[in-house]
Length: 197
Image (tube, rainbow, N blue to C red):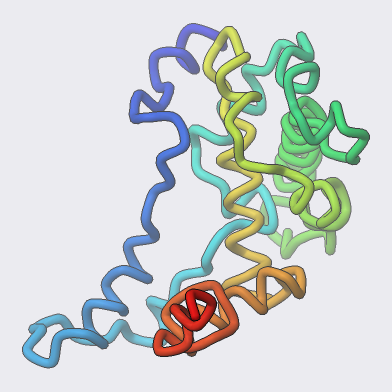
């Protein structure tokens, strides 16, 4: 699977995050009174991010199956090197294990399968691992077949923040400051130059 994975690899600049189209359209609706777009129906509501393999993209799942388990991503990961729980290789292995388990259960119980009560996030990958990532792209750069563990990590972070409101307190404080003050700092724009005096 290395060839198709490399063929379909992301060729955009490393570190460039994809905007969530549904969020972008909602922001445009809020900012532009003359916008001709209409709000989505309730049935069209999108789940932000991913908590299980059914919500990951096909390329993320192909990445999981293409991983050769060489461990270069983990050996280059600064979070792992500093003693944190994160291992990009484990993220890929856990994704593959969950996908295999889910597909086997789906195949055996195709008519009445409603899920097994497990999720990739929580049962296989902990939130501690997800938040330990510094988003530096070392794992992506070091992979010889262009596997992207960071995209799975970012999808799970999106799910935690946008669906569950389960971000770390530091991140919540920063987002509140951006919302209220237009900047990540806890003071108004008028007070920003007070340190000069």
